[in-house]
Length: 272
Image (cartoon, rainbow, N blue to C red; front, side):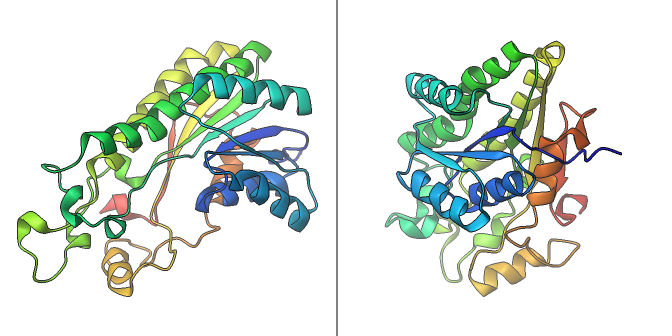
């Protein structure tokens, strides 16, 4: 039986590539023989690519890219094709996730107060960025007659945020922090975009799926981790590297008869 997980020579563009999960997606691609291309608005994209290339002994390329700019994405595609001659995989991973503790107006997150400019920024990166990347890079894959798009959604594409997780003792209800509305909107919309593109490009050899991961442990306060873990049948948050197998599955021929689907990897949280 051929190695259906083998990605040798396949070029994978990963948006948000310098971020927490972007790096993990790149590791999964690289270890299967693929060539990760890290796209990130941060100039750290090239530095992160060099670091991974040195650590893993593989080819990794990084480019500072504004995924909300179609001209920049078109220039990016030209560079990818000039360097590698092809694009095989697009992982729409980039997203804003505004941290409540990073702002002075801590109750900005509440729906009644949520700033329009923050709404526009979050939708711009998480949804419009995925649309534009698919329009530019996905269209090239459709032109060639093969390719894979993976949209990184969330368990919050399937369920509403449990705002009890974010409550702070002693604050009145109207000042309690909440998970911002844009996160749920963007992640839910990505599942819709997945279904649309899966049927739109089905006859062009481009498969499109989503993955809905649960929360990743990354040093969050112990109280939050305990409360969230109680909502998860497996009793814990995900480790940083636990989505690599799912990403590899969706990007490889192992999922060759799968399109338009949303792979839920959340420790069972959405079962409850």
